[in-house]
Length: 364
Image (cartoon, rainbow, N blue to C red):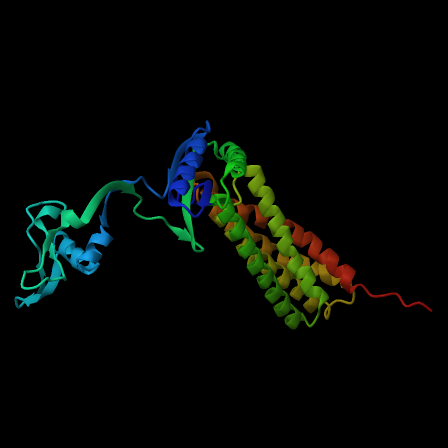
């Protein structure tokens, strides 16, 4: 399955048993959706577990510490490190392990502790561990992840191929119903692919605004104008419009690579506009008429601008028809954005330049 499922919910609460019970309920209800293919939780099932409960009253009466009991269990179970032995090649650990006659687990009858209380000349009493410890067999979940200091179980749900949209819509309705039935102090937080995409687009939008500002600042310094950079950076939005139209017509999603393609268009369309405006500025010194300077600049730059765009379009077109499905949105966004912005740049940039630079009529 993909690393980020379309539907992912995080269940948080204080009690482990209730948390696991509610997580399994959420998992089962999401799995009952017709379009669901697989649902998982990250808590796992309970594992067999032995709990040793010491008789603290008996231990206190005979002055036996808990450390004595635990050290005996450790000796029979995992052993106690004694040191290391150097054989000239590597250091080997040396451990002391008590043979209690059991291959697995601990035989409490064969282990004993000595009382710390002695009466007269009598030797201290000895107790086997089964006299001072009771064993309880139970089940326990090995690990419960935490998020923001709270116990959290994550439920992932994956739809059948081709039914992502319908599954996500129905899963959201199921989640809203479950939220109303949760016990007090338990909460359900939605995440998953949709949430990750939302966070990604927010971050990309912030970076895109910063990039546009830097482009505006650079062009303002180059042309010594505040209006001209607005005209040039405006062509970026023409490319974005073309890319979105292309994705919509081709049925491709607005994915990470599609967004990357849209961002990469900024440099191409800005460069075309800068070159066109720069030629117009140069022609103004050679031609007496502003309109003539604009026409000649467009005539001189139309071929390089169109050829530059066509080479990029020709290179990416095979990916649209024969490429991997992952890279199709990238190719579609760049090709559609270039086609749309190239045509409109050659038409709108000169027109708006004339509006900005037209001589003002003097009133008497």
